[in-house]
Amino acid sequence: MDLERLWQTALGELEVSLSKANYTTWFKGSFLISIEDGKATLGIPNNYSKDWLRKKFHPQIVAALHKLTAGQVNEVEYVVATKSGLSAKPASSPLIHSPVEKPTTPVRRNSYTQQPPKLNARYTFEHFVVGESNRMAHAAALAVADAPGHAYNPFFVYGDVGLGKTHLIQAIAHAVLLKDPAKRIVYITCEEFTNQFIESLRSGKATEFKHLYRETDLLLIDDIQFIAGKEATQDEFFHTFNSLHQQNKQIIITSDRVPKAIPTLEARLSSRFEWGLIVDMNLPDVETRSAIIKARCDEKNFQLEDKIIAFIAQSIQSNIREIEGALNLLIAHCELTKIEPTEGVVTAVLAQFITSTPHKAVSIGKIIKMVAGFYNVGVDELLGIRRTKELVYPRQIVMHLLRTELNLSFPTIGREVGGKDHTTVMYACDKIEKEMKKNEVLQKELTTLKERLYSIPSPS
Ligand code: ADP
Ligand code: MG
Image 1: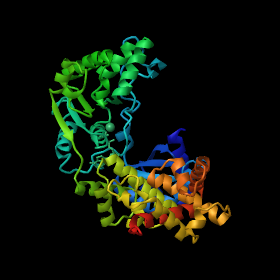
Image 2 (image 1 turned 180 degrees about the vertical axis):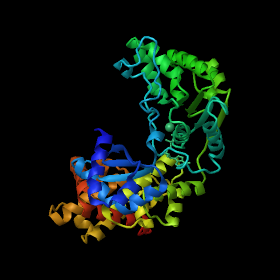
Image 3 (image 1 turned 45 degrees about the vertical axis):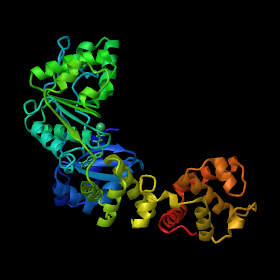
Image 4 (image 1 turned 90 degrees about the vertical axis):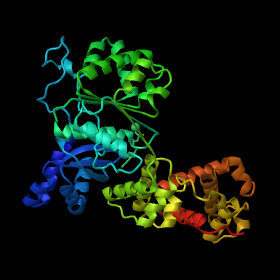
């Protein structure tokens, strides 16, 4: 889909329904960044316009995009971004030419020419919350963004998964581009780098490949640990590294561990990685996690009480990505079922993420009693063999909950609900799962059940 054309058409639609003044003031410089999973992301050049558009014109914008994409877009998200801040290559800026190519031939459009870097529009310094765990890394990143190639080269960031490494290094790229849109920037994961390199050898385009990577102003290589064991790629990267370093071009690397701990990383590479600055990123403390959740809620225009934010921050201690996943799930759930995010709801929805949930308090007996009470049927009947509608439905709910909340196997569930065959259980679980996706009443019932399950002390 041509995003630019689509957005221009949408603007045409919007123009008709808005006053001229409104239109020119607020939509100036807006552009469509992406459409993914039904969600359109709009780039708006400043915070003020972003908030205004979101508050005042959101329904119209969604409607226009929904219509023009034949229903593909259901949601619109706004981020502060400028077009130049996103695309590294205005058409007029110099591209990299390999000697054999004439500048104007379409040959340049092979995969090794400089393209706008694939950056996540949200991974900016503005959206990065600073706390003790990342203060050092953040400060160093700012310094690198300020004087690429001169402050710390290479800049090596390491830490566990989901702690903001990719976000932080892309923030550097955004900042550099914002200052100078003509800067050539390549962001690539180590895996992609490896694949491209191998492909370039295969297709006889090794020269183009070398040129692309050795003539960029900023090279960001994400998750370098994947280079372990890949000798040819290490060799190629070694030369790329030297070439860039000699020209004072900035190299930025992330990894899940320090260079020395990457198995089979050649010593010559490992020692080069230590030339610049190595910083680590850790799990943010609970206050910082709360601040991140709060920031994400504001971004998404989702109201969440402080005490619930603190509750989530305390409950999910693995990493930020998990926290975001949980939050997205919660938001989707509340929006879909139109219920308020109370502590009970949050506990129920986030049960799968929350490690400290007292799962032990949830027992087979408790689930059965709870469901029987909820649907007003007797436990004996529920576990019996009669197959009336009034009994089959709650019975299937019991099986579903035993599966999702206690992770029991199908045969075990069958035994527990009065000696049913495991295929009956499989059928029931499958049916509820499918039904859940389209039936809001069922969604609400399950949420209520889980709320009760996790918040009421186990009846003895
Ligand atoms: P990594 O590359 O270390 O695995 P990411 O950079 O992909 O982690 O971060 C995972 C998610 O957490 C991203 O959506 C990112 O925006 C978010 N995130 C991580 N740290 C922060 C932070 N300090 N402030 C705001 N968001 C953060
Ligand atoms: Mg990453």
